[in-house]
Length: 276
Image (cartoon, helix red, strand yellow):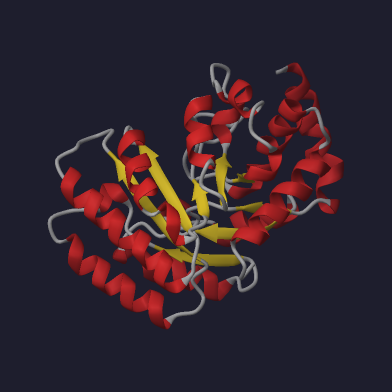
């Protein structure tokens, strides 16, 4: 942790203008940023975070998400998908609307944020499983990567992924914080990456030990802002400008430079999301 503390201020002050990062998962279109959205984007760019990937949550968030992509072309890139915690009894209507958009709007770089979440409730377990399965099929039909959310649902997620293994899918397992065995199982799916964010910097996080067995070539950076800010911003609103703090923590894990982390993770993101 001492190494992390030393590296970050140096990066923030001197190195960032020469380094290019991608935030592969950020919700800057949400209401938490309504008062200073342009300033948040400008801070990200100043920090070297040149591309922001925006996963949708539900049909209601799509207008603000797409408006942000229109305002910041070449910087903000949209995804489309129904978040598992937004799966309700009328989920099929939302899926129909989203599928129509996906097939007519070429801007979408991925199907996401989709997946399974039984942390708060498993009331709609059956519906979540069906919605996830349907959206995986979308990714297959349009040849787009997946941005996958999983919380308290690893076994069910693994079962769905195994079912679709032969379909040539690719994507990112967003906000990964699991075990070494879980990382190995997820990365057995070729073309998939682990999305690593602020949790890596937390004092009791198991991620540094887990990632020791994961090649940096299988990792992309993300913030999941406004959630899960890295140290030293824990307890505050997260934003894309904090990506360098996560990169510095990764550099400490892999014993390499921040430049190397930026180079590989940015190349990974560009390879995954071809429209970047």
